[in-house]
Image (cartoon, rainbow, N blue to C red):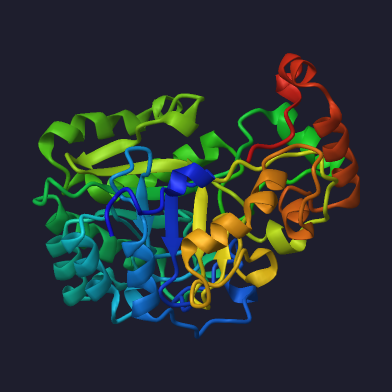
Length: 370
């Protein structure tokens, strides 16, 4: 199949493809829908994965990468390195996302470094008192972090591999915003991660001390800034570069989204638009239009029944409605953009009704971010 015949996902508004090769995970995080999922055993057939990848134009300059995770841990799939081999041979850009728990296995480390994919480690929870409950894991934070540190000391010599370690933080930098949300019944984020930037910075400073002694000397100076936590990040931490511990390894505080809102929140009306650019394929074959979908409720079709082009062509109206205000939305999408309380839904609907100019004028009252 020539590049002219291949499917450009960006023409349908997607620049990332997430494929669950298996439905299994080795954590049960309090902020993730995985513990709520009925399906924890499905596996996508390799032929369906490979046929789908073969059909997509990865020369598209606007396409970013493929991952092999949605709500699963890819290192649990014994076939994952066969999949990475396929991607390497076919020059498919990959971002390997993992919770890092299985980086204590030498074979996993060797293969990840061998295939040279960029890697994101979802560490998220830095509070040792919350770690076990938040990750559904009977393991102390120090022991968990140790495997990640050991992996980093090996990976630092592979300069072509870029590694980000993500740490979660909620969007509550301004106290006024935080208490306004609480009063109105609007989501304030997940309790497993700090509610504001300062709290995150204090935990982050302690966490980075784990890395200080092993860090390259040129980066140790920047780590010393941690003594003044107010200078760790600018207020606009959504765009921060993070802190390098090696030339190719960075720790970042990232915006944290409460993943269970797609099932636990109350639905708002149709006066919103979703510009999710992540296309997901679940382990049971369902193709979904965002990274928060964990079942077939908003499936656009199944990859083991139709090819990707047919699925996306058949879903044009659904996607147009999703991306356009006041057009009919699926109930699941309305819950995802909804709130944890009924009064919060009322506040959200009123806010969405306001003209953009007024919302911009009263930006300090912004209720949440998506």
